[in-house]
Amino acid sequence: MALQARQPSGNEVRIALPADPMKTLSIRRPDDWHLHLRDGAMLRAVLPETTRHFARAIIMPNLVPPVVTAADAVAYRDRILAAIPDGATFEPLMTLYLTEGTDPADVAAAAACGLVKAVKLYPAGATTNSSSGVRDLTRVMPVLEKMAEIGLPLCTHGEVTTPEVDIFDREAVFIDTVLDPLRRRLPELRVVMEHITTEEGAAYAAEGGETLGATITTHHLIINRNHILAGGIRPHYYCLPVAKREKHRLALRRAATSGNPRYFLGTDSAPHVDALKEHACGCAGCFTATNTMPLLAHVFEEDGALDQLEAFASLNGPAFYRLPVNKDVLRLEKRPEPNAFPEKIASGAGPVTVFDPGFPVHWHVLP
Ligand code: DOR
Ligand code: ZN
Image 1 (cartoon, rainbow, N blue to C red):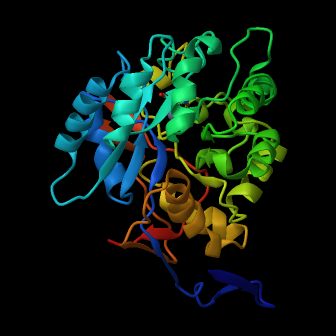
Image 2: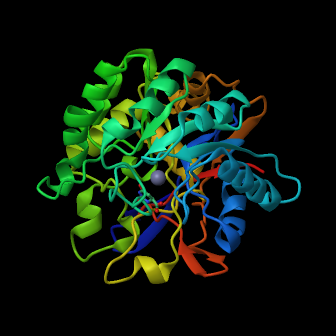
């Protein structure tokens, strides 16, 4: 940092001030409790961005066609394992995509052998590749009852798709009309509210007790809806659930940095090639795998809560999923020079833009 002092003559003299003292932070290696890896060339391009910092991730099943059965999950897990870069250690935690044809016995078998850690509920039409999702919850009750019995978590994309409901209200309406009635009917069902974006979502999760968790993305801690829409439309900030107004972002910041075990990191890092983001009908998704950990260190430091980053990124998720905490650590360092994140990463199908927080980030992950 340099200050400019004005001399009586009008000449400027630059006085060097000491740079911010270097800070370091060591946390248990984090996990990502909500991640899209896709398949094929895209999988091979994006997986190293996650394995660099994360030990495990809950892998979203919304491929085309989706990962519906235990056999689908085995085959997808094997493709992921084959794409792990040499020298990296990474455990994909597989999920099944809930359809109205899902067989409860297949789900139970996939959970019993440890293959599958959760089932994902996409309301049909809610987001990318959700057309095979659930239209009528009563049709999947036998699966949900089995999951409640065996303790297998249900990850929910918590938005209603009714056309009359405004897109900014979809999450709050889902909580009132779908999630809360479901949890009253099946109190043992363990539920993760994925990528919460509202004050209402954060408040509901806080009251939910041990059967409820909520993931929060990196980008929803950083952007509000103005970032998407004011001064020109910015497709790389468009994701679902869409970012809401500022008071909601602030509620998410309070939740994430609170240390409350109900909240944990799920990046929802969702790669789409630029050609499909910068499009007349652009895809939803922010790609944050590359820079999530430095961004989170920035956010938590800004809120005076660096001491809570480990709970959010490395402890609360394993506690909810009843898995051990990672043994090794991730070290971060705050340096005077900002981190030079790549603007894009190459994939077989074209470039994928890395999420741009819009401010310099001085935290670096140490190798
Ligand atoms: O923004 C999103 N992108 N939200 C989702 O729910 C799905 C994801 C994707 O698969 O691209
Ligand atoms: Zn997602």
